[in-house]
Length: 73
Image (tube, one colour):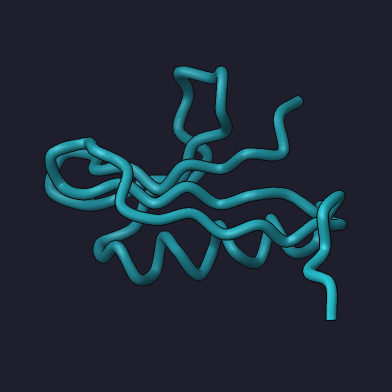
């Protein structure tokens, strides 16, 4: 099961969907609510959230797992 969760437009609202799956995990009225759900799951599983625009293009992404290339400081 993929740890990448997409926030995608869905009908008149928004949905979360795991990468590689055609099934929607959850449906929401707003993009913000869908993002909150996706972030919560990604934090718990150490995954990544990919947020799409209404036209389907990728707008942003955030990782919540271990960074294999952490910044040097």
